Length: 282
Image (tube, rainbow, N blue to C red; front, side):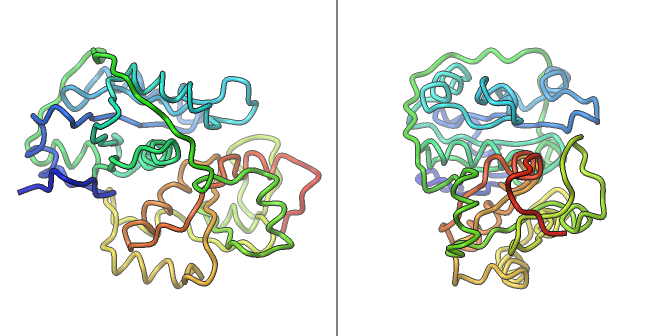
């Protein structure tokens, strides 16, 4: 029987089927795609989604005044946005993506950032749901708005100033989820205008390293791969990537090993690589 009293960071499609009729379970499609793919998560949501789900827009639930991609909004704006999606203060939120784990960890992290701990990622995402016989609905979501209260947790996020200060303090380990080529500066950045390379003294752990196809690896394998990259417990990690999305997959992976002493650099390489006043190593 599924555990209805706590929210594991990761739940299976079987768990979701068993919990599907619970009034406190809210399902959100958090699919997002790089602009160059010319795919739109909201459009694809209407073509097929888990029944009763709403669409969590990573680009929409963001700071409208920032020039950087999908930076986190204020607590008030987040509460209003997810409340409109039908999420209440005591609900268990299950985030999924159309291509497995995908971008769902970004939504998972945002809920945790704003104080909501009852949140999980659907392991295997939409493919796991349909493979197990789950049906799909089409058309727009019709959520019933709920009251949601957000409390910002600064321990879960780092900004440019904090990451710059860490260059000298070295109290945290910056872990980059981008590909090895982007980290080394030998692969062209997908966003124009960004330098190649990485934050000095950071280490590279491509987010795909923690995946087994559309699913997360087992905790013991996650632990081994994280430790091999240098995430061994002596310094809390700060996860970064291109724009703060795939970094959250590393955060999810570390959480599944039992460690919770991490943060995400929200601006990531879109911020750091786009500036001339910070150092870059390649």
